[in-house]
Structure formats: C-alpha cells, structure tokens
Length: 442
Image (cartoon, helix red, strand yellow):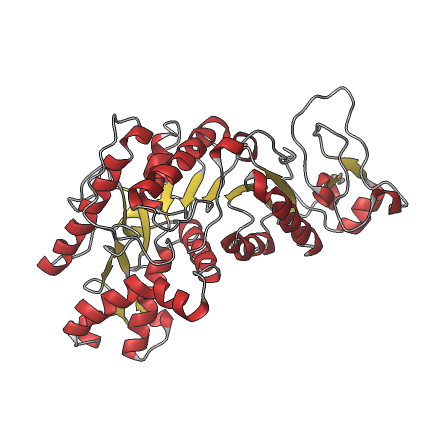
C-alpha cells in the first residue's frame, strides 16, 4: 500500500491543536455563534488567523478575537477551528459527548485522504460524538497538510470541532485518545526488508516515545505503516507507560479480503461470512484461517468442500490480493485500507456479535494458544465495546493450520531480532528467513 514518508529528523517546527475541552455542542450553532462568540483558551506563536480561501484584508468583520497577550504558548489551531461557542446551560445539546482527540500520522497521504472524512462525519465514533483531529506530517508535506485541513473546513462537518497540523509528534500527540499511525517510508528500489525495518522502526520508536510522553494514558494505537506488526512492537516498547494491550497492527484488510473470497466461492453475500481469523504477520506468511471460519453459521469446510482450493488458491488469493490490485489500478490500496481502519476501530468500540470475532495484530504475552510471547501477532479478538478486547479461546487447530502459524511466528521472531536496537534489547541481528514483503511495499 502506498504510504507517506515521515522524516524523524524534521521535527523542528509544528502547528498544533487548541487544547479546548468541548464537552458539548450548541443546539443552534449559528445563533450561539452570533450572540456569544469567544476565543478558545489557547495561545499561539502568532495571532491566530483564518486560513480559508479569503485573504485577511477581504474579511469585513473579525471572526477571531486575539488571544490574551499575557499567555505564552507554542500551539495553534487551524483556521475556522480556532472558533468555538459559549453556551448558556439551557442551550447545551444534552446528547453530545465529550470531545475525542484523534491523532493521525501520514495525514497528507492517500489512505488518510479517505479516512479523515469518515472520522469527521461521525461514521466511525457515532452521530453524536464530536472529534478533534490532530494531523502529523513531515516538513515536506506540511503544505499538503494545510490543503487537507482546508478541505475539512469546507466540508462543514458539525462534529469536527478542532483540527491541527504539525510535524512534531510531541505536540501533535498531546492528549490523544486514539493514535492512527499510517505514515511510513515506502520500500524503494533495491531496498532490503531489513533496511526498511530499520528506517521505519526509527520513526515508530520516536512516535512511541512521544505517545508515552504526552498522549492519554489509555490511548489506543493502531499501526498501519509497514511492516506494521514489528512497527507496533517497536512503538509499544518505546511507550512503557501505556498498556501494551492498547497497541494494534492492522490486519483487518486481510480479514476483509478473506471474507470476500469465501463469499465469492460460496455464492453468498459478505455478511454471511463470520469468525474469520488472520493469524500472524501482515506479510505473505499470513494465515487466513478457513478451519474456524463460518458461512451462514456453518463451518466453511462444510460449505466449501473443495479442501484443495481452500489450502492453495484461497490462501494465495488473500496473500496476493494487494498485488493484483496494483496490477489492475497501478497503485496500492487506499480506500479499502481506510475502510479496514474504520472496521478495526468500530470492532473495539461496539460489542462483538455473540459467537463472532475479529482479527487484530496484538501483543502475544499471555496468549492461550502457545504462540511465542513478546511479539505482535494477528489473533482472534472479541470486545465488549469499551475499546478493550479479549483473545478468543474457543478455536481449534489442525496440523495444517499450526504448521503455517509457526512459519509466520518464526518470521516475526526474526524481525524482532532485526530491530533489537530499537526495542532496548541489545544489538540487532538480522537473519530474516526470506523476503516475504507484501506487494505494494516495494
């Protein structure tokens, strides 16, 4: 998948969010804005300004009062999002909830271009949940990031209460309750997987330190930038004050692709496929589990009786779906990746349907399957909707499934050794068994 490069050496300047706590929204925003306009309690390096498609000298009436001169700060909101509303108690909309702070890295990239508008619209967290978007980019992408913020302004989402942009994770991640880490360096010509692990590992080590320093203590972290399993491990190792259980590597797109292939083979719609697990690494060693999956509540093997197809063609199609898309379209998946991020978040904030589960790359320590501990490994999870999860225990294994699980486990253990210098575990030693990078990472 196409990903945005973030330079860890470029965190020298930033533009960040207003820290205002908007716990409610006006029942009549225009009236409230007209009658009780005030500034958000923040201050900036310079006087805040409107950043819409109107020059300052064309604004007939000042929309934003100046920040108090006696308050020092290094943070600044973006454009129209510097304005909020002062409400009388009887005008507060009781149904709206406390603001959620969402940090997104690689925010000027193609995946984010689809994702941000889903977050802002209420599709992800709900139609009564206001959000603040904290957008992290690189120095070279800052101008594009301003363009993204302008589009968010022009979309007039009532739930989007704050937007900031910046290149310093220590400022952008301030008070983040969700961190969606999409930005990473794509694999260049001739680059070995070990080299990519080192380059991107440094980015995620720095971002882990930033999350540890300034994010909410219960921040949920979704790592999308590849190699996402090991990047998630690096990130959590550099954030010791945040529960390791809060870190996820995105394997939901692989799960969605597997469900698609089973539905096509069985001649049913996608919603008839359940209990689909992706085991292991987000690479060509990943294991789409047809043994525990179900179609119309029946085991897949009772509906699709062609076991040879399941073992060979099905697995290959899921593993190589990204490459097939690139051949057809000329670029890697972006929209479907954004959808899978949304699916992953919603699986954590809504109760899992009875008897079903979902896949996520999570920390293995304490797992009930006998998988090696201290790595990030995709496994079946359930949630009661509070953002947390538990591992599913009622799964079965046969020799075929277990053999493939051990192969992807070996790859992740090799990747872990390759980034030991970034996880605080000594000198790195790279003995990757083979190059199993997914298409689109090259």
